Image (cartoon, rainbow over all chains, first blue to last red; front, side, top):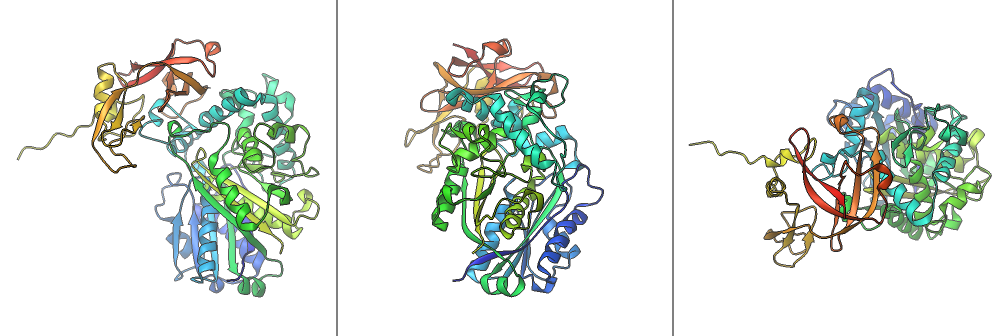
Length: 389
Length: 143
């Protein structure tokens, strides 16, 4: 059985208040991917549409998009694992191609979060956890991740400043990413300046600046068999490893609060499948929905030992010029986090990096890249390893 | 034929409940009596908190209730400055997770504990609590 490649990538700008409907938002990423591969809709054998439900009113968006994008009568369906929906879509696309069922599969992730208010959005996200036993206490995503941050600080001595450094890095690259929703600079001083909008507490110990920006956006990946990839693309990027895991939805059902087991397990699977170790990774995109999430990803993926993630950021090892560049597109923190579009956008960044087409954020000559995409509070995790050959 | 009355006691759980009917509705009944209860599988003895109606291990639905008693250790917590829709009136409040040995408990920290007094590792007990809007939950108190 041959390899499976990503032959085209696309992403809409990530924005607040997209001035169009969800099918029009989907078109933006779709158009860029179709032009990237220079193929037609006739080449696409199946489509997988990915988002987290209840942000817009459309039920079963797959059929609506297939019609709008000219992808009928080929099969299409919808998949969701909250914030990791589009890498779950990628895993399914990989399976379809690998099984020989389809040769070319399009994965379209989207989210129009601005259809509802920020407080409603928090309530929706909170309901991506345990609605029977936890939501009645008034939970929300920042508070759950804050509990992980508190546990990490208590066990390892990680500081609020260490977490802030991650946001400073994100903003360094968000400023030069034309598709990022948050283009402003963030300095360490802003975290301690009471006048700064990012210094206020959201859920202790996390502050406004520790949290990612909600956004509207779409992403599109086209996945193909080795034969088709070589025929349709000059520079396919290959999927070398792909892992996925789940964890108990209820915090009370978990044992680890200083890391996300799904990232660790999915990472281990992906490394094993690719025959690689963390040292082989030249550039990575990790799920930094909150600063603590990036810190835990460093450790769960083996870039640092447990409790040592802070040394990576203190020494700027995860900057573009460092030993393991992470989220040099601004990450979820600055690029923005349109839930269902996020994983596809992370894959797009790595594909562009491996092709040498990442422009101002290009890392020097990377061979191997990694994508780490988490759904909910470490409820779902996907890790994908991509390579040039 | 008379309409069977629905047991919707679960809708009383928490400031806002998102569930109205559960086979664990008795949990809310016990909260009304001031007790915080979990379930234990009568077949294999596995203890569950939060309570479950069904045991995934031996596939039995034959459960008995036990009271969450004694001291737990606070594993982690967060104090919220913003809340989801429906919880605005409770702010600020702290959520936490405590380890009771064979099970863990997720809940609120009692509102009368000053923020600066909450520490990871501190001993806590659990108590049933009636909220200002008449709903029921449970809170952690300092042991």
